[in-house]
Length: 150
Image (cartoon, rainbow, N blue to C red; front, side, top):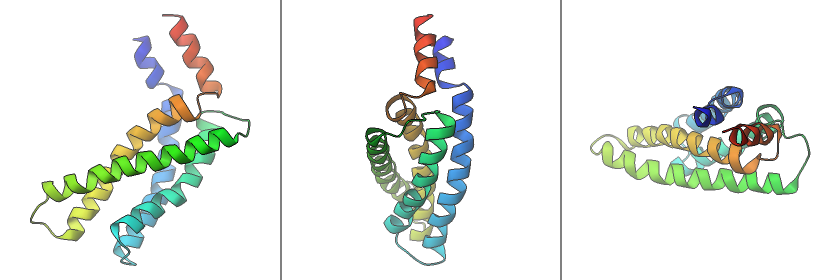
């Protein structure tokens, strides 16, 4: 039971709220670029994470994970994390959606792939931000105490 509390606590709820804000902004950019400005799948999805990553970094660093000190290492980890999560999520989502929706239009396939990529990205990103990127914040102290009390 304590193991579940490590993942589903106030920090998780804050991450979800920050993610909703980030998703509204990033998805708005992505779907607008793809559907209104006719940019490619990759340009549209990359711009989602360029714009959304700035919002995500600020909200998650200072509010969600309460990591107050500025650190180039933390910023570098965040950038590498976003890039890895992006390429894993969207790299897997596109072929999956193309296979799953074979026979549908390219627009339907790629819009679905972008949605699936967002879902995969969110899960990977939460775990890596919480346990790698911002592990030195207040959140790390809480996790350490929970594990020691087992």
